[in-house]
Amino acid sequence: MAELKEFKLPDVGEGLTEADIVTWRVKPGDQVEVNQIIVEIETAKAVVELPSPWDGTVARLLAEEGQTVDVGVPIIAIEVSGPGGNGGAGSPPVRGGVTGGVAPPGETEPAADVAAQESPAGSAEGIPRRVAVLVGYGVRTSSTTRRPRKARPGTGDVQAPTARGLAKPPVRRLAKDLGISLAELAGTGPGGSITRDDVQHAASAATARSGQDLVEDGFRPVTVAVSPAATSPGGEERIPVRGVRKRMAAAVVSSAFTAPHVTEFLQVDVTETMAAVRRLRDLPEYADVRVSPLLFVARALLIAVRRHPLVNSSWDAGAQEIVIKHYVNLGIAVAAERGLLVPNIKNAGELSMPELAASMHELAETSRAGRATPADLTGGTITITNVGVFGVDGGTPILTPGEAAILAFGQVRDAPWVVDGQLAVRQVSTLSLSFDHRIVDGELGSAVLRDVASMLQDPTRMLAWS
Image (tube, rainbow, N blue to C red; front, side, top):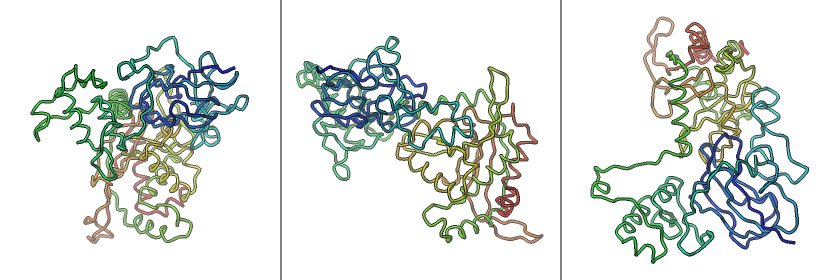
């Protein structure tokens, strides 16, 4: 006997309460199987693919693309033949990661929880690069209130659009904020893609029409006031703060006003490091990986952490304890289209140089593409940020919340330098180390910064101190 089951937006294990529906992969009438990806959602940390927990037929889509949905609210109804399946109303939560597929009944993998991230063995074995099961179907149903769906009047359940306009995430977000359906627009960008101007023109046209006309035509009225100032070169633009940018803003404010920051700077001659970078690029072991100066900075910091473990720690205010991490989950700050992300390489100190290079490149690419998982973005212990790629010499980086130090690597440029008493032109960079002064005092901070600089000035020290 067929049974109609509603799949509720799961708690993806990030402590978040809502997510945006990005893309439906199915439509009413489609047959789906367990583990088949049915929807992409965007949380404050990552774009996550959700698989179907059941075999069956899609009956209704209960949320539109672009809609923000609370955790625990049904997003799709699936007609299932007979009992079975994971999740849904009244079923126990499935524990685990956040992307990939749902394990069939009786084959659920163990939870990749925070404790696993905070132990060397757990980080290496318990948290895969792309984890395989979802977290928490059917949670917090009693504490959430469903937002009204953006449906056309008189149409009942939301149907998937027959054609979906191509648009980049910022354009999709703008369309969502202005109440514009991308499926209704003809794009003027490359390959027929929809541009920001297309969305703004559609919003202006919709605003010029009366509310009655909009209702008769079946469109949701747009409540955006368009004035001459808004379309003139000297006008204003408002960008909604949500998703990654919202979380980033909250994190840096919390960090800046919780941990007492101190930043120290040191200029270093990196001529020998730059020569070593060129030599590594010619070795067959590095043929398939990207070798950059940041690789040497990362290795130098990992060795410095081994020499000074206290810099790789956190402050537990509740217990009034300093927690020293005897493993390094190395965070790499990435400027992605959705905002600043800090994915981290689990157990980076245990990796060889080629493995570290491959991990850094892979994590940066997946983060820029919006594919970083919450496991990638949590559990970091110390961070590197490369401000040199923006042509900047240095700065005062803000600590990643929960960490005691962050190292900024400035641009490498030619500069006059004294070598053996003689003035010479050398390749020079500036290192900036910010640290939590509750944990790291000036002596320790200076020792860490000095060690990193020494290894970049003479890379053979990395061998001597490893």
